[in-house]
Image (cartoon, rainbow, N blue to C red):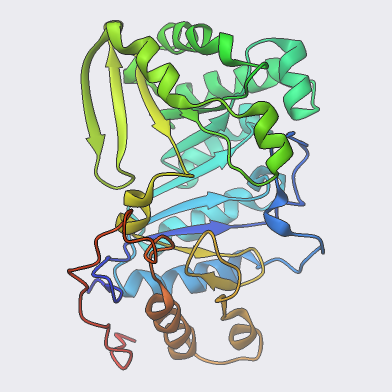
Length: 330
């Protein structure tokens, strides 16, 4: 059984934050902390396993683990193992690479399939300027350890910042090639989010310029259906994906994930905080799984494309049937 929302979008994935954005040992200059200001009470590994097991019965088959920095949790290996034993087909994680050099094999054995590693610069001074951490070498070791452990293809995430790291695009391409290119990794060049207008004006650099720059060396390209992103394969087998979160309304229309917050709420839309659906209260008050299922169904019903009000960006002429909120496989 796979649920679809009111706009005929299936829900087959979950993105779960295992701690808040406050819980990160990095202080990246572009990070907006997702508006989090209070230290929360986090879900336990048992609570995470329970909610994922409910979602699995509704057709969720892949899980992305995020934070904050998920590797700050001392029980991260236990969390991965519990999610895997539910039956989830693919588990991935986004991380700065912290502790990954030592835990890559443990995570792989627990059930982690691949990682996204933030690597915004290959130059020590710029890496520090962006992240406020002197951990460039440790991050490179984390990349190598992840490849050795088979957490591939690794995605190397690089937020492009005007006047900071734009001139490192080809350095990153050469670094990717040295790791084995598309056989082991994919570069993700990420466009800056417009969260702070003044910061955005100073540092925003359009990815269109980089796409034009690499075009002469592109031998193949295709569009990923899930995110509606172009993937370019260069003549040296380096794979590059361009992430444009601000303008990619087609990704919004094709989004098949439900988000789960660090404090036990379903988040139907990345861009909204006014329609979260609490489920952790029911778990902690001793209610059965049917109550978690009810809240999941409510969250799926609340899902709607963020850009749907802009008719020039979206065509909503084929809106699907509303989901039946009474259906429950538990």
